[in-house]
Length: 241
Image (cartoon, rainbow, N blue to C red; front, top):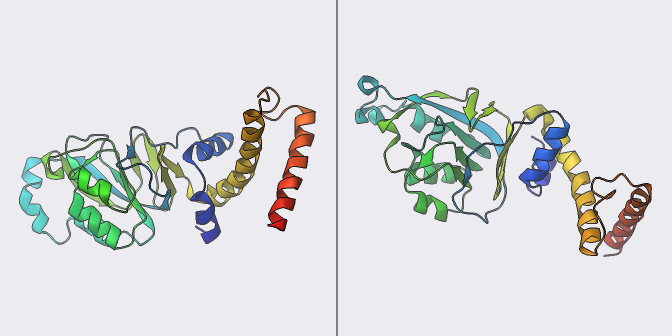
């Protein structure tokens, strides 16, 4: 992901991204049922690094498995690249936690951009207070070993009914989390700049009492001309400041 792409996506809302991807033919990129533990944090942007859970089998998943230095959950925390978002497929179940505050703190300290699970976190009040974007389905107290077994690292997964491939660009804000296919990230960022300018114009006109008919979407020729004039005015103001 280009630095300019990341910078633009950090200024772009997930609803805007959803609209752009819909125009490009992608309708199912919003992770369902996932919300921020603490709203109001800066927008999360990073490339996906994934972890997949499967249903736990008791004979293979006793609490002693955590003694194994190669345990997939621990390895995922220790190998998620700086600037990436750890995305976990927890089978849309918060009955057992995907991780707790110690692991998420370690992930933060290592420089990850954020974390997403379609399951839950234990110690969620602690995680919520960290200066770190974290998204989950619901709080959870039981350890992941209770019902889940970490299996695969950095493979294609399903998270909240969305296919997430390693390297996809993940954007999270107070509305939720969008997944942008890696090859479309630059295009989405470019289109978002245009869309933000247009929506700023529409917001100004609607606030002044103008009807949305022919304005949103922009189908009226007079409105189209006025929009071009408005953009020139904004550019002039920007150059003078």
